[in-house]
Image (tube, rainbow, N blue to C red; front, side):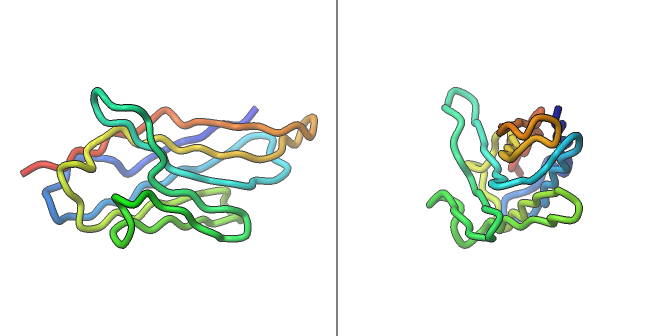
Length: 121
């Protein structure tokens, strides 16, 4: 079983920065895609950013140029650096990790518990 622990959310003023972290643990053989999704009140969950094992990245148009996703494979950790934050970035941010289990070599798709990011003056 794979567990994800997120950290780094909070309250920040418009124009400010936050860095989210998500560490995966458990029986992991390999990790492929790591990503951050977000869900604002009354809206559907959407992809904010994702990074593959080959370090290819994908960003939502709304965050391009402001957010940067990165990963530390030695620590099974993914980061999301968020700069120039706007009130519309307010949402619960969820970490998502897809890979192969070290127990049965089956694929897994794990989600974090979510961390609140609030951008407000």
